[in-house]
Length: 98
Image (cartoon, rainbow, N blue to C red; front, side):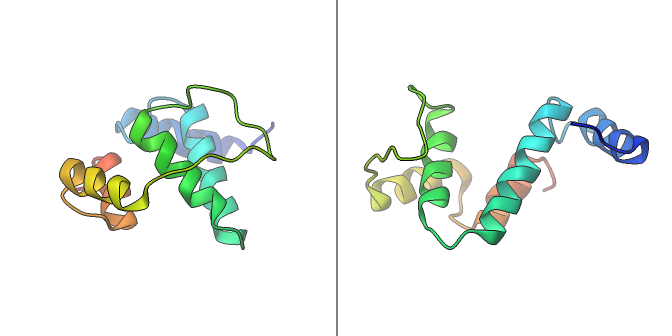
């Protein structure tokens, strides 16, 4: 993927400030947010919760793959860990913007 130099510099600034570990992580986060913004399916947020809580998927999931998640149990763990179940609060804390 090619990006204008100004965007690459902005990505580097975010990495330097510690918001992301790498350019790739920043681009992946931007892509996830874009997909969420345009998604009409609730599968993407559930998938993100699973990946966030576990750190990463223990198996490769394809487009047609599904998994079950206990939403209340996930919310409990999220509240315990982040002190909030607000997506904006969690992202802000994760990106060290608190």
